[in-house]
Image (tube, rainbow, N blue to C red; front, top):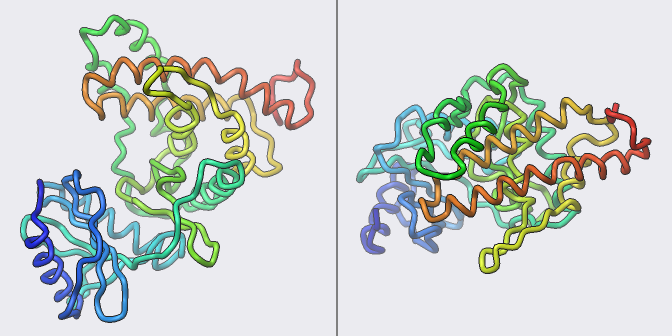
Length: 312
């Protein structure tokens, strides 16, 4: 849904009135090709980020999103905080959207460097130490839907065989997860603190899906023009070292991380349309083929003999 700037400015003013601000100015709209409205606004001498989701979005999703910001932002200081409207609610329904308002945090996205990946690993470990969060992640952890995909593709049999190997993640470690955590969804503030943004699918889920997300989705460097690929072993090892610190990773733990990586990559394979499926399949196969080499590098980093089967 495309919203004209004039209408958007009106929407923003109407939204902010519910928060006690009569004079509001639209400064910037992000991701204008999205059905969601994400706008930087000024009200008085303060800056805010307004997020608007189409009202077709289930109410429980909005409740989950806003509670995540209240919990992780207002309480834990790991994300931008959320404002309360004058009536005490955290979101409002207006002009065909669900709206909520966040504090605007000045800063820059983290980069794909070893130092930043190490720090992301540390932040994720902190996040995974939260076990009492009451809302489940909206990420669907059921692999059965994948069997219905790609019936006419030549790789269908091989694809289903890969899906067969995936565990039931609902039976594995449960904690607070982000579900899409990488440099693009993290922010370094002007005082050096790392905050998490885009909490749309966050909540209680399997930590292996969270841990696994970057190992194919991010660490496979794919040249779209040439089709060439290489693996960012430097980033992958830095991320794991940040997460585990001096703790050694068992081979079983490592296996579950890669199962999470495979699941998360597959979950995106229809996201970009049918023309992208072939390329995403190739990325999946390439990523899987790097698993053993990364394990070897981890063993070397712990100064263990090659014949050892565990990092513990």
